[in-house]
Amino acid sequence: MNHEEHLDPSISKLYQATPKAQPSAKIDVAILALAREKVHSKISKRQKMHYQRWWLPLSTAALLVMGVSVTIKIMHQPESMTQIPVPVMAPMVTPNAEQELKLDADRPQALRQERVKDEVDEMSLDAQAVTKKEKRALAAKARVRSSESIGKRAKMENRALLKGVQPNRLPQASGTMTIQSDSANEVISAPLSAVPAEAVWSKQQWSSPEAWLKKIDELLASGKKSEALTELKRFSSNHPDYPLPAALQRLLAAQ
Amino acid sequence: MMMTDMLSDELLFDQFTKGDMTAFEHLYSRYRQSLYTFLLHSCSDHAEADDIYQDAWSRVIYAAVPFTSGSFRAYIFKIARNLQIDSHRRSHIHLVDELELLEDVVDAKPNMARTLDGEDCGELLVSEVALLPGEQRDAFLLKEESGLTLEQIANMLEVGRETIKSRLRYAMKRLRAALEECL
Image (cartoon, rainbow over all chains, first blue to last red; front, side):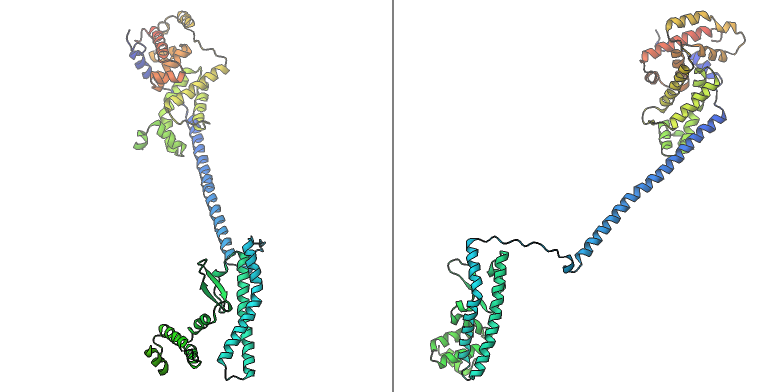
């Protein structure tokens, strides 16, 4: 059996030779009109979709711009307008901290008294020639100054303790000095009255060479030659270029 | 123009779905004659062929599930054939499918060519094709008009390749017998 048996070329040829029927022009026009309508509806749909394609990113961008501008405006507003009262929580108080708080609470008054006393003593040393009236006025001034500085410092320390900050991290007030503790090897802020007077004195003089020299002169006058010499050495090491009086130069040279 | 002529049916249809009307015009001109002839030879009259032809194209244009892959040729001829079957069902025309009945039909109309002396062989062939049982006629017309391969026809009619071959063989046998004097 021929594998092409299902086909008959002569019949196919005869069939292909028959006149081909064609649809009427009316049908052609109707079909093409349908297709055109579909194309137009597709184009209008695409235009609609194009519109829908851009409005979403545009609205998103507008929203973003608004959000950013509002944020920036809030950030640049005065603090008082933006500040919201926040409830303050009481700090966790350990037994040690409680003791320190008690000590600090008592400290300002005691410190003030000691400080006033120290300054008055110091001034009495300085002002031999000053009258009693002037002495009283100076003492009153010093009292006010020291009470202000000590009070300020005590307030800062109290506040720091409440916030849980170590008081030694606070900026040093003029009325206090920092010393190194031997046992704990940590910096402790203490009022001047708690530190030896000499240390306080020498620390104070470092800022004013004239006063320091005056003190050395006084030490010499009062017969404390060795102390005067020690101070002189320290002075010359701290102020090597400062012109010393002839008497002190001779004393330093003799040593 | 030349470029569009070289494009495949599938590409033209794709361009049409993207809004290219010219692509559709080219595609339409390619199938205008063969599809209409196929329908005209399958249907009982011109009016029915016209209706089905128009309906087939409108389905191609506004298809709910548009053509995406495969052969566009097979796609459009399948639409046309399905519409034709629906139309026959509606008009209560029963297609002769059984082979036994086919033999009866052959015996009932012996040698048409001889009784129609002087008639054009082409016209005789067309009339004989119309008298073929539905399955054989479909196979023959699809083979001659659409230019589809046996596999494509088999896929379209959802039968095996050998079944199509068999149907074509029977159709040829009958046509050869009817057109004995012309061949």
